[in-house]
Length: 113
Length: 117
Image 1 (cartoon, rainbow over the protein chains, first blue to last red):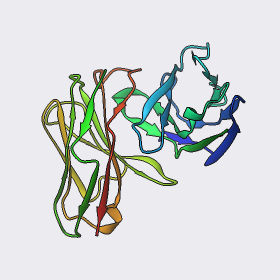
Image 2 (image 1 turned 120 degrees about the horizontal axis):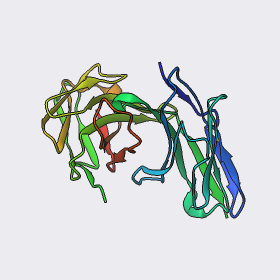
Image 3 (image 1 turned 45 degrees about the horizontal axis):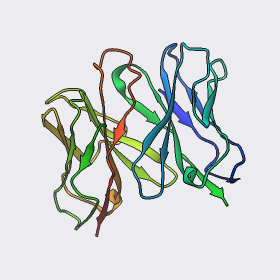
C-alpha cells in the first residue's frame, strides 16, 4: 500500500522568511510522481509543484522548490520569501500507475506579517 | 484553464435522505475522483472513474455510490445520508490513460460542504 505522511500539522513563518514543509512516502514502485498542492482558506485546491521520481534534479517553480530524496522517500517543499498569500493548507500527494492519488493529512501554514 | 464545477457549495440534508453531489469538468479528462476532506485526516478517496460507466472503489466507499454516464460528469450518491457523512466533498479530474504512468496533476472543484442533520 502507498502511504503519504506529513508530520507537521501546523507551521508558521514570518513574512519574507523561508519555510520547509516535510513529506515522506512509502512505496515499492520505482517510478512515480509526487506533488504539492495548496488549498487557501475557503478556496480551491491548486497544484504548486510536481516531481517525477526518475528525475534526479529537484523541481523549482519561482519561490517554491522541493528537496527530493528518493532513497529516503522524502519530498519536502521549501517556500522562499514567504508572502501573506502563501497562508494555506498544503498537501503532499503521490501517484503511480492507475492515476490514483494518495494524499497526506496536510500542513496548515500561516505566514505572519 | 481546466474548470471543474461542483453543483453546490453548501448543502444541508437530513439523515436517511438520498443525496446527489454533481461534478462536471470541461477538459475532456478521462479520470474523475471524489474525495472527502476532514480535519486531521486529509483527503480520502471515495471512488474514482477512469472512463465512462467505469468506476473503482477508493479507500472509503461504504455508504456511497457513483455514476458516470457521460465523460464530463461524475456524480456521488449518498444512498441514505448519515451524520458521519457530514464533510467537505471534493471532486477532481485528470487526463491520461489509466494504464500508463501519468504525471498529470489533478484539477479540483471548489468543494461542497455537506451537513447531515
